[in-house]
Structure formats: structure tokens, C-alpha cells
Image (cartoon, rainbow, N blue to C red; front, side, top):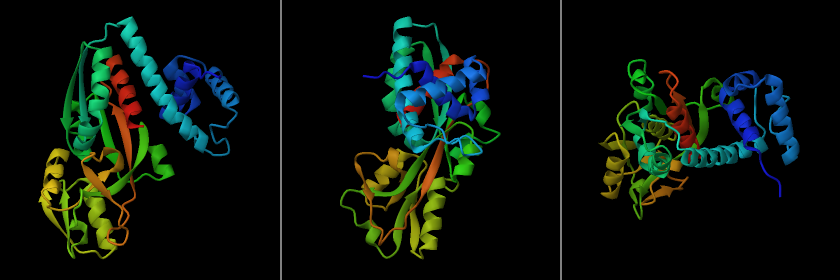
Length: 287
């Protein structure tokens, strides 16, 4: 049985995050030829090309994208185990800005593991719309920001720093609800400025499907309660849909919504190793 070397996987992940071999070498404290050699060895080990060398810019092959998902999860578990046994003196406060739906569905999966590995780190979470979190006025208030991006073409993905993944937007309702069959579609949504709300209204307009906003509330818990009461349907990223809600796949009644991009930005407030560790945990949880 073959084994995947951790150092090779880390180089591969960092190359993808920073967008190049030279930048990865600088972050990892290695030379550019050494990083390049690691990737060649990794490709030989897997007998698959991981990078599209015909592309003018750094692009992963389909196999490279698949490995990236595995690599982030492997590194997260590796770093969690090392943190547990080394018991590093990592402490301090991390201020995390995150959309509410990700806070409710993602954080429970990773916070307990992170807290066990690094018990002296305090996590402060603020939920808000992505546009507010990354604004010039507010981003200075955070050490780490999870944000959504409306446009996610291949070219735009390369332009977004710390891009993590693409997620599909879906229509959601309560189980057994027939709200989506109403002549005028009742929509439950976050306030103006929400990417989901804007996408839903735009796609419904293009499909010439009449609709009305029946309830506006900024957090997932409130949206879920409104849907459970039969006030309408909403739009969420597929990875954040609670188990109690149902994804609607009625293309005759509802237009397709496309995708959004997700990035995880470390705000530069100095060398805070705890922030990078939490970022790695969150990335693994997103995949």
C-alpha cells in the first residue's frame, strides 16, 4: 500500500492557495526547485498529472482537484493530532467573521475538535452578510473571514485570494410544502445585499416567474423557522442546507440558480499561528 507524504501534500495545498511555486516556497521556507520536485514526485506516486502545464496560469487537473480535497482533510487531521500530542503553547483570541448559515452548519463540526487541540484559544464569532464582513470599514475587526463571491468563473477564481471551493445554490422548503407551486412564489430571504436573495430575484425575473418577498430575516435560524411555518421558500448553498429542510428539484417551477464561490481570508494582524490553524480546520470542514 502506498503512503502519501504529508510534506508533499502540504506543498501541493499551499501552491494552490498562493497561486504559484515561488510563493509557496517562500511560505514554506523551501526553495522553488525543491517544491517543484515534491510535486513531480507526488505525480509519480499517484501516476496522474495534478497540474495543467499547458495552461498559462496555475490550473489543477480534475485529478488535482480531487486530491486537493483529500489533502486538506489529511493535513487537518495530521495537524490536529500533532497539536494534541505536542500540546503547543498556542493561545489568544481569534475573531471570526462568517455568514450565519455557515456558522450554524459548519462550526459545530470543527469547533470542538479545534478546542480540544488548542484549549487556550478563544474564538469570537460574528455573523453578517459577506459584503459587510469584507468591507473596508469592518474587515479590520476580524482575524479570519469566510466570505461568499457571486461570480466564480475560472478566471475570476484565480483573481480571488484564498479561494476555497465552489458551492451550488439550491431552492429549499419545509418537507411536504407546496409553496413553490403557488402562482406567485413566496420567498423568504435575508435583507438586501445578500447574494442568495439577489440571485433568486434575478433568476426568477429572467424566467418570468412572479414572486414576492414574504419574510426578511438575516440569519439561518430565522429563515428556517419562517419556512417551517409555511411562509415560503428560500435559497441556500447546498452544503449549508439543514437536515430538517428539503431541497427542491422542480425545474418546471423553479429556475436553476448556478453557483457561488467561497473564500477564507486571513486578515493581517501580525503572526498569529492560531489563526492559520483555525483556517486549516475550516477548509477541511468545507470539503
